[in-house]
Length: 144
Image (cartoon, rainbow, N blue to C red; front, side, top):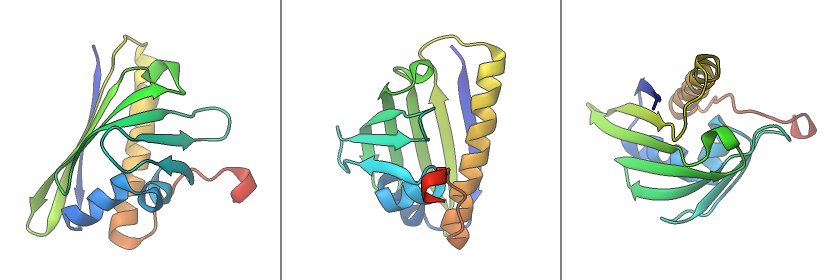
């Protein structure tokens, strides 16, 4: 199976990055403005990108300032049962974020390439949000 990996150096503490990954305010500031979060292990996160892409994640691991792990359980067939990991390592008051998406099914290289490109865009948005409060999340036309 294929895997997407991104390493992102964020000039902010792991606590700031962790909050951006685990709260509705944080997630809506870098990934999509339309999100609801059940903020506990076993809780669901519902992401909405208009009517096109609406993944639902179950939170499996929430280790403050260290690790966030999700599994996609609905809303996007290509991501069904995929595992997502955001591992945080403190580096002199900065954070090294290691993002991994493990695919549960084989997809075409074109599809992987599209998802990889999109993750690069949104992880850069996460970095901008954490460092300067200027993320670039998906904003549907009705709330733009």
